[in-house]
Length: 125
Image (cartoon, rainbow, N blue to C red; front, side):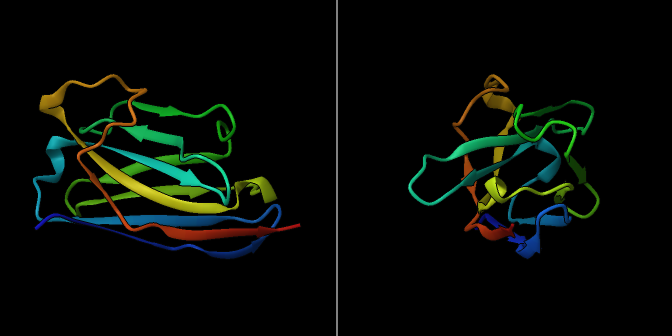
């Protein structure tokens, strides 16, 4: 059974930092590109960042570029999202997702094979 479990969310003041983690189990982690998405109340889910299976390629939404960093540790089956200079508009539930390399989807895809349950990030002004 595949599980993606996010952690590290919480309440932080504007300008602060958080580090999210997503621990994967039940799959061959190195065979999956990983993504982070977020959904704010009343809004659609939006792409945040993506990292290739090897970690050699990353992509970010314009809204987080320069502030967020995605990384992964294939030995630990974990993907991270380092979030700095947080803004109130970053408030959302953050989800990690796994995209198998065999599907050869574009980096812009929202079609992922597995999703986590999400972790809440709240940024106060």
